[in-house]
Length: 350
Image 1 (tube, rainbow, N blue to C red):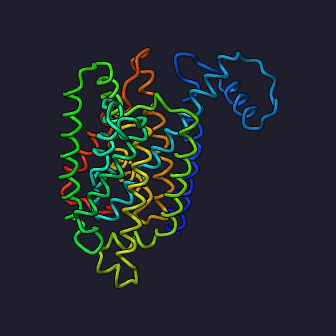
Image 2: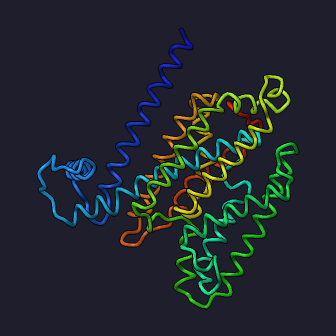
């Protein structure tokens, strides 16, 4: 009886989160320098998606442009980034059996930062200097991941701790390289732009970013659904997982590869945004339980909603200026992180 009651509560929470995300998307499109009625927002989106005039156009062309061309794609990408970073955090925590792991534990964010800054500030260089900023970030993230795995011997059969330590060292190197590039760049406007991107922003998002974000997130969800039981087993330790018949090296490869892809793609669109992959999985695990089948939907929805509202706060808190989204997530996430560290006996599902 108690088990059924808990299942019903979890289902209600999942439904609530789904409704919350939809509400958040509408409010995020509504709120800004120009407030737009939710009815108009719904009508514009319905007309554009259906390619038919389902609703009479009682709005201005400027309102339609703001909703369809500016805010709607930004909201979709923000939701995908929040869900994607949360999912990458879940993968990293299962891989390392460390509840304090997050998507940047292997130094991927530092590589993305270096690639983005190089593409923005070193325009005279061949290849990297000719790449657009998101492409430079993606290239830098993938390069970092390759270096970590090559130096770490793949990190598949060996200690995961060794892989993490190598990631920390390479992360420090790329962070120093980023600082050096910024220090040597005389163009103050480009430096300001690079610094703003490094702290996270969805300002440059357009419809061209939506499909990559959606497809990457869908691929991550597909992988997570396929190996959810194996991740449950990994949380109990590699030896126990092997006893349950889990192919641990293969699962490690899948976790590393998918989390790298998720982080690289999402960071290339949003810049460096911390704490989402740390805080959201933890909260979801506390509420829904440690089993991935139960907590994955909650973490994805909570991550999407959290990131959408972080972007809204960044846009309106110091209007007409815009705060970096990473500042908002850090202000919300850092105190929570410190609270987690104060717990002397923190374990999965506790």
